Length: 300
Length: 263
Image (cartoon, rainbow over all chains, first blue to last red; front, side, top):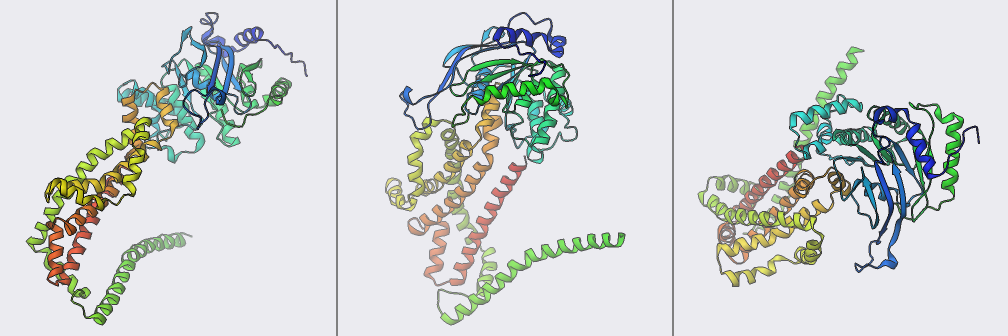
């Protein structure tokens, strides 16, 4: 260990996360202290494997998450890491309102969530773009659902295309874009609906290393400008450290948060930080936590 | 340097023209060879039921100006078009519903499989007993032939839509109707048009089968007449005309498919 000191413990971690992010402080200082933005309270979730009968065969059900609790502060960037099959994506889907909880509650702004809402937007692992729709139409998808006039949504979509570095590609179809460009469209689509919470489900997991690093830099830049409350699911410890205020390390199945690791490095963060003692120590610590967790057979 | 570039461009232009010529010339060469082999075969048989390629071509030109031929085609086409339209009107919504609602899928999937593998021709006598030798019976047969081949690809088009797209739409708060309008229908359109092409081919098969075997009107009546009068050239020419009509119909459906893909 270097001079970097660990601050384990849930309460301590939350306090640190709320005080050590200059960007967050600048963007949402007025809101801090009014309670967590996202409150995951003793959430459990089980799945019945395909092929099991439909009579509630509890013996055959797989417990994906058990008694999982954590909070995310307003404007905080939290990453979730854990072994395959520990329920990371399930957790994100439940916060997004795409899956229900079996037990426990999830609150956003102290309101219990019962489904998807305009306050949350998801960036999916495989971009999930509609192949027949242009870049602009894909970005404007959420706006169209909200019946925003076409000229208005096109203007906004073009602005966001520029923000994510896709100027000149507005009328391209997803099939004409690289994987990284498709993910940029997915990110712009999420930002288009002006969410308060950005949920990122391994958005760079399918990208090559070079594109992945470029996209991480892009996300850092864009997030710094918005200060959105963000939850990132990732398999990459380095990515989690680079982007986050706090890392939630999950156990193997059944998944639960075994430690909240605050990332106290200054922002704005940049390339080269991976070599600093703080970064190296954080990486080692998270890997130590993960190395004790068995990976499940199935994906989460 | 510039010379070589120009040469390459000129060469590529010539290459394009040559490629286009080959695309026309090769099938034409195949046609000529088939005609020559056919004529040789006809020459060796001396049969009333056969005609040389030249005789068939002359009969074809003659039939183009024969009102009776067009009347026969139109008589059959009415049943074909009405039957196919009914099959599409029932089959597309049914395929969409089966594809979207799992309970309906489980309920009807076995019957769809049966309909796909059962030769519909065996149902024709039952239809005729129930409805008599009428145009209604003819239309019902066309519907029976086409319906499974419209329903199955349409269902396939819906069930193969990636769950990610539906999740994405749900995450932005899409209601069921919006999911249909913005995701399911555009996503399944390619498969639906494929179903229409398949359905049309089977509708035509049903139409001609019923006319040849049970209700001798329109195309079937004319084929039987040519056959019984040993008008081999006219018979082959008429079959050629039916084939061309089908190719035109399929071409139109392919055009729709391409336009949909581009849209």
